[in-house]
Image (cartoon, rainbow, N blue to C red; front, side):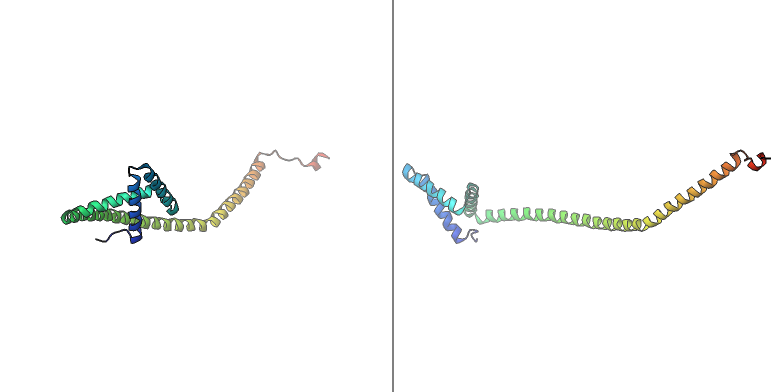
Length: 164
């Protein structure tokens, strides 16, 4: 099995492990110097505490896997493969659903664009119809007003007849 850490990472890990062993040493002077050395290296390489924690977890996990029997290791790999296949199936199903939704939205967008274009074409005709309706209503209103005045107004007296 290939080791996932590069040679440089393995050397850094060994160095960190040696420094950590010195920190845990019973002699206070050596532990303090080792701890300060570890802090200095972490600052220089911009390594956070979380990175170290993850590194040690990875190392412990690799060590545990290395100690297990080949059959147990194969079972773990099968289990992990099965989990990955299930995750892949779920993602494939989700991908298909998203593709269907995307296609549906594209079709709806096309219909909305066509409908919008149709309504934009009708705007000049609607304006013309409104103008004609207004003009026709005005002419009819004037005609009706004249007709009403013709029948309702009192007869006009000819001023020429009054002067005789």
